[in-house]
Length: 274
Image 1 (cartoon, one colour):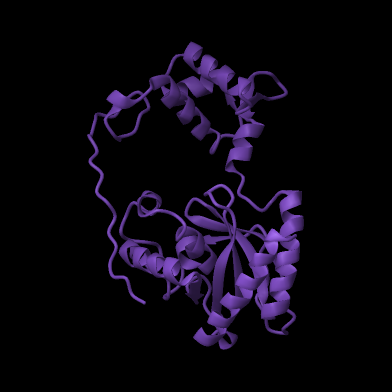
Image 2 (cartoon, one colour):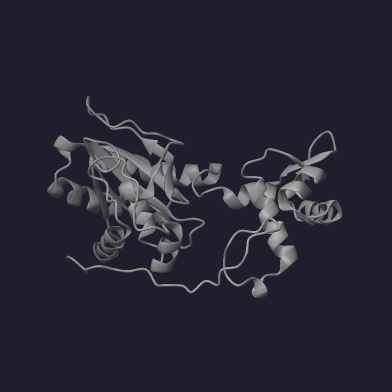
């Protein structure tokens, strides 16, 4: 079923001059400066294992006293911790927990293990659970097919979300506004010749996925590999998972993929009983 072109909404931004470490963005008359400084400091932990007060002050273009107060506030809330030397700070447990996708905890892996075992048995193919991190998916767990020629599970591996069935399944659970924020440009990177490379085409495909309840990828992430995915768990962006079955193209025609989608749904339903 085709739902036609879906366009991103246009958001009016008020340009402003750059300076003081800020980037161009919406009208800053609505910005809480101290909160903005704290958020920018947390972003620094994405690229720095540790930061001293002086380093943070220089990178944020603020005074040392401001950097120290912000770091102390983050430390008090568990978003930063002091390193062993006592001179610097690193990401705290709350910040690490905030960025961790679903499906990696011991309890989660135990519950999902029974679902993966059942899905591998029903489909006869390699099955994996995937979570969304930004514009990529990460494989949280998997079970290998018994076929001599098979797809190998990649626990911890990542792929572009728009090129994989698991990623497209998870993207379809987001709003159009969220998708446009994640992909601010019309052009999308190609992984193979089959990858969708236009945001408008991706939005239209996501609308179809919402209607039919499963997502497909035919050689879009890896040449010669066809996959299908269904929702597995979660109601928010923090805990959503997809269940994906992968097979070589010669075992992954459309009829086989649709059949596996139903088998995956049956297995995913077990999560409420395990």
